Length: 77
Image (cartoon, rainbow, N blue to C red):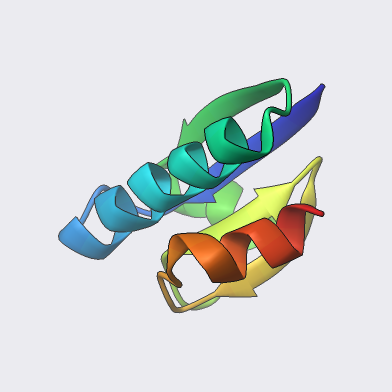
């Protein structure tokens, strides 16, 4: 199972990233847990300075953008 972490305060871009990540994971048929991290101190512990960001199993894959579902599938593969 993959832990997919959305790092951000809940802005529209953060919500878009969460929707796209969930759609990509479902399309790929992978088991996942989606976790939204909104605490600024916890986000900074990941080394993220721009949100939204996506971490997979604790490793930051993207920051400062909300890519489309196809791009996210490439990151999750």
